[in-house]
View (cartoon, rainbow, N blue to C red):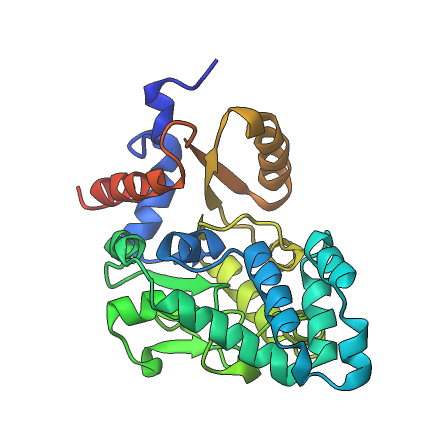
Length: 290
């Protein structure tokens, strides 16, 4: 049975969200992911992977002869079907780091010319002068919308405490040396000593109730940071649900709640799609400002 209208938008006035609302009023971390960038007009990571494979195919003449010979149509098809998103990025980077960098920048530039600011306008409602934003996205659409300089942001690997208004956890599009897209780059951010991303996140999770928005919580590095905290705060995960994923979300949210103290806040998108998130954020904003 489809969800009724009361379940369509979370009721943020109920007691179980009191801590979330209070945290946002006083100042806390809003953690955004690819779902926000997608609504802004940028590609999801799987879409970016496929676009990068096409980019390499169209520019294979720039590769050394031996590597050019290895990149045939079958390999391109298998790179697109490969289950692990990072490994195709690794492979393309090994083929040519220069072509990899130019491909990422060219794809993001094209997307930036078609940006829709509506999601940033809605998200900015949560910017009450106390909250700050951490993002795994490398695009700078939100920063440009808010009109803030790089002096008010921090970019991997140079994070700040207290956090700047925006922290780019995985780098920023115009600074390729800051990107975290390949496994080697992930290792530098989360594994090698000292791991700047991991240390930054542990500090965030120990001191703030984090609200995840437009982020699927699929990266083990994020939950590992929570597991390394000495004190376990309550965190919240706003996530779109629909009829055919309710069991999946029930299983995942139970694990996330019991192990990491992350509370799922579902909203139901079957009738209206992902853009219902605008209404969810607006509803939260209205409760915050009562």
